[in-house]
Length: 230
Image (cartoon, helix red, strand yellow):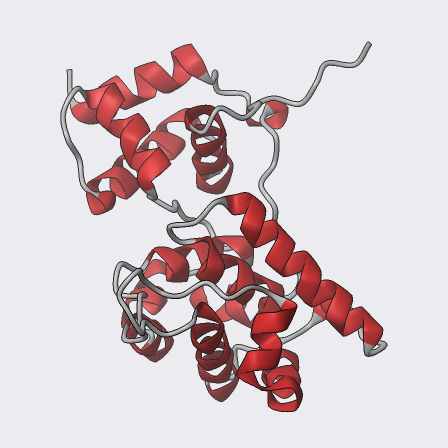
């Protein structure tokens, strides 16, 4: 049995194939929130990411804005007023790595927002139109510039950002890699895990985003399905 077949078999056994019962992942109609979530989420506890996103929301509401529709340009303007230190105060002070003097993730958030705005990808609609095609993603100057930033070379935050904007994909983080490794009975890398989960989604006729999230929830010990009605 191939690795792909083994993964599909395990998914059917542990998760089923009815994506409507799986708890849906968070998505945004705001590029600003998608940037903050994706950059802060790599290598961290997600509860802290939620807190950072909500603190940004609160800060923007205090300014009379609607953070749930903030564009990349809105985020650039906000950091222009607050400064990076102000963004840190309104999100968190995590750094891109544990190395001494590593850049702050808030600095990366600011630069990512600038890159998106410079390439006319300031809104979620623009991201979906411009980057849903896999070929467009691979040749995108935005991807090249994003992955050149501190702590971004793996491409995990980039791919997750696209998913948060509603672009199909798989965030092959340690939870997803661990699940796939268990399914196939041997070590796999992030790239192979992403390819296998994407293929499994196609084979099962489900959304790759929904399957990725279901796997992540199962592997991280969270409920996978909505609670049944009483």
